Image 1 (tube, rainbow, N blue to C red):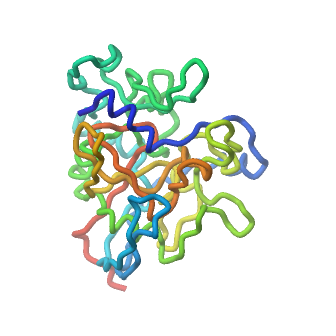
Image 2 (cartoon, rainbow, N blue to C red; image 1 turned 135 degrees about the horizontal axis):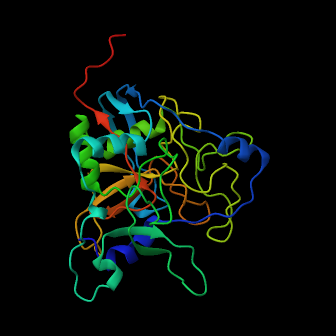
Amino acid sequence: MRGWIAVVTFLIVGCGTAEDDHSTEAVEVSKCRGLVNNKMIWVPGGSFTMGENPRYSEEGPPREIRIDGFWMDSHEITNAEFAAFVKETGYKTLAERDPPKIVDAPSEMLEPGSAVFNVPSGDDPRWWRWETGAQWRNPSGPDENITDKDRVPVVQVAYDDALAYAKWAGKELPSEEQWEYAAHGGESARPEPKDADGKPQANYYQGAFPAKDLGEDGFETRAPVGCFKPNGYGLYDMLGNVWEWTSADGARADASEGVKVIKGGSFLCAANYCARYRPTARQFQERGLGANHIGFRLVDNEKPAPQS
């Protein structure tokens, strides 16, 4: 159920906001327009160690996992891709529908809307708020739209919305095992996605969250897909940018409905707060609640492996 408790407990998934302080390199990155075609990439099967000796308890214990090969979207589903689905089917996301009637819920939660990050201040200490009118076309509410953002990841999609898109596309949401294996890209994960020179290699929050985002990666919010180098399998934005739904069930005692595992962190994750821009990172999100930093990508488990 999408309720007030959902918004409050959603704090565990979030990180910061941003202010203008771009470096020259960051400005160049921010000119990226994104990829046009979402090609599927073959991820060859293999074995890997899933999980870690956890910095966060939900990430362990480590265990050996064997994965069969599969096809995966090269990047997160974009606004343009989701718009094509909506145009053909007339689908309405959960955020566009009347929310469940919850006793003693704030008045704004009686209207369609969703969870939006709020910059905490002395006047309003909340990190997350229910924003009436927030949905995939207006990720942060009526004051934000997706005009000229066709290649930016779609957000404000709940788990069932992602499932509906997957069914229409003839694909599936990845299992957590598939997602984590693919995110490694056949390589060892770094504690923070930076290259040897310290340059960010993903869209995440640099600086002291939530007071100051240095903007070293060139973005203050969601980046167009494919603006950073792909990993070893050719997959873009597996870390940072937006969290991604998986098909895995999670467990959270304070949730008012079933929860699912989301992976990868987002543009709101900072080293000094959540540091969940790692393949092993995982969070438990109520399946009926989207947000302005959660998206998804798909896999195809039926398409035959490449011949060569």
